[in-house]
Image (cartoon, rainbow, N blue to C red):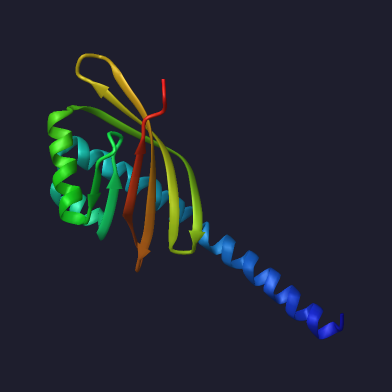
Amino acid sequence: MNLSRIFVLLVLIFSGTTFSLKAQSFEDGKAIIDLVASYAQARESIDTVMLKYIITEDMDQLVSNGEWRHGKEAAVKGMAASSGSNPGDRVLKVERVRYMKEDVALADARYTIKNQDGTERKMWSTFVTVKKGKQWKIAAIRNMKPAE
């Protein structure tokens, strides 16, 4: 292998490393965690204005009962109805943020709904987040209830 090929290979390797480090900034990670917290608060208070602000137009959601919600309007309508018929404290604790690209990340969270009767519903949620300008938004949510 000649010297110019080695140089090109090294440039490609190090540019990929730099890109990965840039994508995983502390500020972006905090913004994604804060976004999930805003979602939980908006769900708990049935704040449809906030929900519309933090999700994308083409957002989709798969809820734990298998129902799909496609698009912002269907998602917000379903979220509001679900929060109204299933009251309780919603706690989403992000355990991991994984970057797919500089402007796309997955956030895996433990999702617990503390019901008014004292029982808890324990699930997992994965959020697909996208960065639009300087703002992170939720593009998709997958809620899963593990087998008991």
